[in-house]
Length: 93
Length: 233
Image: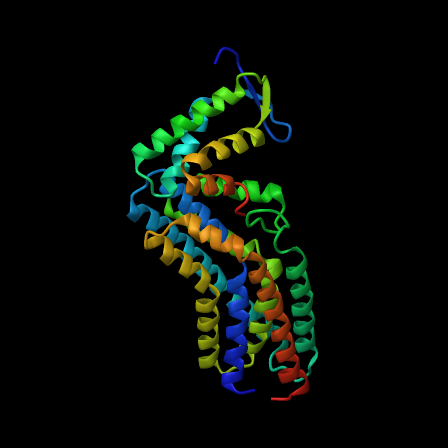
């Protein structure tokens, strides 16, 4: 990415630069929780991160909600079951 | 009041308790995080079993507390007003369940404030050992006390009027049935089934569960009124 995109957190927490590793880890973790093999989880996460980075290019600031939505949308194309769990993360309780 | 009648009422109250979903939500999340972190199956089972034991122990302690408290406060109940209070409480909680138990949004978001839900989410995510999972199980039952008070109160009333031997049977019956839904989810997870299928089932049936819990409370209130206030049966 040629410039930094900032991710706006909910509440009064400060914005922070987009962290690819953080997104990658969360996708891997979600794929693993559907009992997918590690290799599949890693490949899916890399592909989702690439698509999200392309989407972030023209943007200087996005919210965590936008980021999650976009990641879920990309994940749904490759792993619908994981995408469902990813979307459910904050709305299970 | 026959033993069968009393145990049936306790059983229905316990099933209503089992239909409340905070513990199940937390267990589903706990399992998701544990599997997602590639924890070994025995570690996943250790965490989920500790959670189940915590919730079971808390349910046991609560029903015992209610039975003891009512027994100490009222002794043998001659007047009908404690039963009327129990019926009123059940009707109030039934309406509360119908109106506020699930949020009208996607997912299985419950009535609890979002700040508390976020906190529970974080706690579940960072749970690594059995003692933490155990305390989460305990917390999941305490957090729903506002709804559990109705089935616990009426069960406590009924248990307090039984002979000592049957009191133990009533407490055991309540405890076992009240954690039956949690035990079922625990068994499904332990059997290696998909979490997304569990969550999808919960999401698509949430309004049925909400309706069933509210209606169950109204049926129990009517049964209690007819049996213990009017004395029909």
